[in-house]
Structure formats: C-alpha cells, structure tokens
Image 1 (tube, protein in one colour):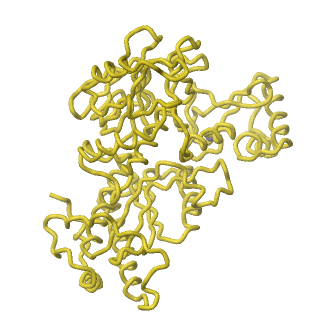
Image 2: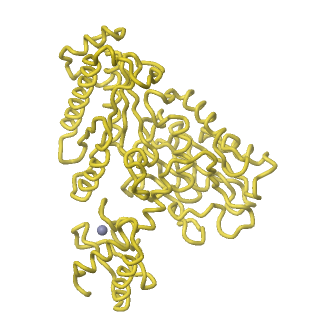
Image 3: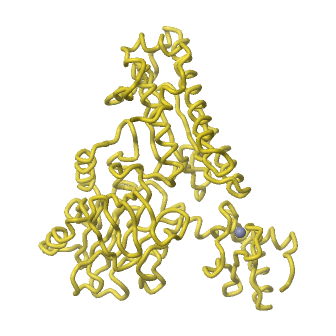
Length: 485
Ligand SMILES: [Zn+2]
C-alpha cells in the first residue's frame, strides 16, 4: 500500500489512460507512474464508488493499465470506466454502418480457435474460446452479432414510431426485405440464412445445409431473430413458447446479473457448427430489451419503456390536432450530428429523438428526451455532460425522471406535462407564423399515416385548420395521460 496518488500523478494517469486524444508526452508520463507502481508490486484503487471494495486498475508491462475483472466495475461516468483504447473501439462499434460494410459472423473451416469470429466483447477469450455458456452482461462494446441486429433494426426502421412497421406481419416482411441488403461477407446475404421464428430452428439448419458454396471456405451458419419473453440460464424462451438452448454465451444488454432475465427482448442467435463437423446448433446469442412482446423496437431499460409509452400517447394526441410526430430510438452514435464529428471517440446517443410535423407536412420542431433512471453523482454528471451536448442543436430537451428518488406516477406526470407544454408551444408557433413564410424551405412528405385517436378520446381527429384552432384551447392533460384500455 503506497497511499493516495499525488495530484500530479493522478492527473498524469487521467491524461494518459482515461481521456481521449492523449499525446505521446502524456502517455509517457502515465507510463512512469505505472512503472514505479508495478515495481513495488502495487495496484491502483479507484475511489469512484466510494465503497470499501473498490474497482482495481492493474499495471501491465510497466506501460499501461487494465481493469481487474475480479473487482467491482467502475461507477457509470468514472473516467476509468474504459481506457482510451477501449473507448476508441467502443465508439467504432457504435458507429452507423456504411454501405458495403459486411458482418462476418463465422470463421473459415480449418482456422484455429472456435467457430466464431473473435469478439472480445462477447465473452470470448484471446484464443477465441467462449467464456462459457449461459447469461452474462453484454459489454458496452458491441459484438458483430449485436451490430448485425442493430443494422437490421435500423434498416427496417423498426426503431421509429411513425415510420417503421408495427404489426407482426409488417415487421416480419420488413426484416426479410432489409436482410437482402445486408452482407455476411462476400455475396452471402443475410436474407439467405435468416429465420424469424425460434420454432423453425430445424428448417433453418436444413436450409443452411442445402447451400453448396460458402465464401472464403467459411463454415455454414445462419441467424435467428425473434422476440424472447425471458432467458433462463442457457435457454432463450421465445414469446411463441419455443425454447432455444444456446451452447455458448448469451449476452444480455443492461445492468444486473439475475439468473432469470425478464424480457421482452429482441434477440439475435448465431446458428453454426462448433467445430465445422458437428451438427449446427445455436452457438451464441445477443438479447436487447424491446418495447413490447410483439414489437421489436429496442429500449435500454424498463424506464425507457415507460418514456416511450408516454411519448406515443403524446404522438396520438398531437395527431388529433393534425400534427405528425416521429419518434426515434437512436441505435447508432449521433456525435456527427450533435458535435459535427469534432471528437471522434465521443459517443452521443440520446435516449429518444422526436420530430414534429405541422398539418401541412412541413417540419416544425425537434425534440430530445433523456430518461433519468438513476440519481447517483457519477450518473448525473454524465447525463449533465450529455445534456450540454444535446442542447447545442435547436429543438426542445426534456427529461423523464424515472429514478428511485421520485414517485413513478409523479415522474410520469411531470414528463406528460412538459410534453404537453412543448406540443402547445409548437402549435402556437405554427399558428403565429406569418402567411408569407408559411411554406417552409424544405417541405418533407407528410407522415405516412396519422394515428387513430386513442379510444375514449374526447375530440375526434379534425382536418387541419380546425385542429389548430382546437389546440389553442386549454386541453386537459389526461387526454394522453389516460391508460389505453
Ligand atoms: Zn473508477
């Protein structure tokens, strides 16, 4: 035990290993601190949790550090949560895929290691061996399998309310259509090996076997994408009731390590042969919480499900006033939009983004929503920094307080109230707009379909014009606050 780091050494460690864009000099100064520490057989304790059992940083080769997997994780927002190198590869894994990107999931036969393309974030070790079967927390960095799932969900617009398909049949059709444009390497397209029913594993295996040629000698494999009700150890239970036993790890997004993880989840499962000769089996899975048991729209927590429910009721209400609202769950890094790409390893992903369209179809206002699920200091600091970035662009920023410091009903009420005020502001602004400038510079097509009003609605949807007049009257907030029967 050496005692606390001097302020100077602490700053050197921060600049070298935690902050982005470290200079050569900064890395050398950090390495000096690591060297002297390692030569005395000591580790670094991080005090971000403020608890007796602290996260540990281990000196490596007298030059850098890594986090100890045998100690608590750093607090969310702690600068040492990820090293600079990890942050760069984390940011890269969340970047929006470009045209021509492919998603190689399985190794060539004869290559050393396991059947899987090495994915350190998936719980596989350096040799490519799976860390073991059963549930574990998905790392923050996305694996190839989860990147593929997010690409599929964004290409189908399943992450958007107002543009994306919603019913079961429409979602299935959209998945197959988008899969035709996604390459698993070479000319192997996802559509050829995708099934969306966990109960059709045997059909998928049969179809994969029939395919004669595989690019680069890669082993035959297929992908299942479906909604799971829950995950029990190494079994994924589909909402259809089908049970899928997964040979390797099942990575689940979100905190918590409970043995039985409750859904619903949107799930991607890689089906392949473990050694190239044995029969094809479900080899690994990725599960992300989704909106409902019949809707694949991904959410990051049950708090976000509540935020989305309220946003959709707001959208329904705006629809009765003649206004269209498009709600998006961003699935990829949005730093290029919010920061203009000035910090390449800074990831910016708002919880939700919204766009409001006037009755004439013209874009009226944008909206960003953050769901605040915790209230500890590090989390608040991180969200504060995010807010500072998200408010650089025009539009309204709103928070949904969903942490344990507030009664859920009160948090929801405040969020509905803020949304209603926002909606009225937009309507007032559109009404006040002088006729000469009524035509916006860029006219976007009107949203495909305005929603039917919720049942029990007081006002019937009115044609534009009427709707605008009605909206200026005092509207009770229960209009979109009442639970849908
Ligand atoms: Zn820490």
